[in-house]
Image (tube, rainbow, N blue to C red; front, side, top):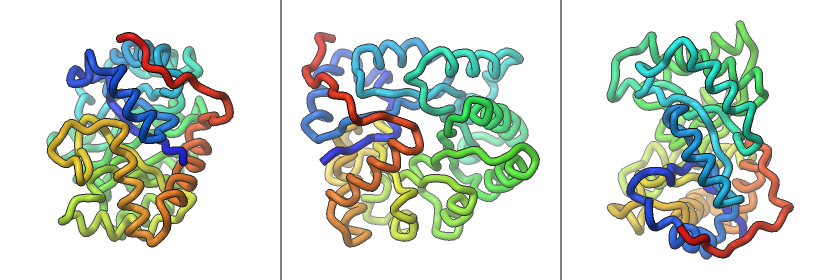
Amino acid sequence: MQLIDTHVHINFDVFQGNLGSLRKRWTEAEVVRLVHSCVEPDEFWGIKSLTDKFPELFMAVGLHPLDADKWQEDTAAKILSLASSEPRVVAIGETGLDFYKANDYSLQEKVLREQLKIAQKLDKPVIIHCRDAAERLRNVLQDFWQTQGAVKGVMHCWSGNERETKWFLDLGFYISFSGIVTFKNALQVKASAKIVPSDRLLIETDCPFLAPVPQRGKTNEPAYVRFVAEHLASLRDVSVETIAKQTTANACRLFKIPLEQTLPISSPQL
């Protein structure tokens, strides 16, 4: 069985000094590829150094909506340059809209549109963060699709209801589920997880956040993506092997990630 964790943040301080053992555990859990998301472009070189150590790790570059105030005149050019310079960059982001913690609506929309343009120019998918902003996000994307053209991408750590899920499926997006789908009271997320077509389904941890049941309350890590896969299998009444096969194929297709080459599995000295 092969699993791909499509959204990690292993550059966070909580993991420093433990990356070797972290990798050992994700290898034992049959996680064969990971996509490292980016909160702001200044993280680029630190994430790139991790991809140099871990050949199964790929990366994105972009600016998170909660950091929209860090957008400068040269930020778009910086993201474009960084994404163009490194073949292990497979996506732009994470970008999107977050109205739960911020109300700079117009600025977030501007920053999102600029990153959509970069993704379109480079023919790379966008990693979309959306919290308390589904309708506004749909409107922005629909307008961009109509005026600039479509961009492929994924709704990451998805927590929307069935109606909202269909909006983004209709726009061509993949839907990625995190540990939230394993939570007892996450009923609308569970309902959404049942309706996503098998060729649009992805899994992630969003570590170090949102550890899934039965690890809830602990620091999340890539190895725990297996619990997300197992819960989705139960919800969708298929085997975990089927979920693994479907989500791995989908991640490889969306992010253009190769699986064929053999990668080392020994933990580096870190």
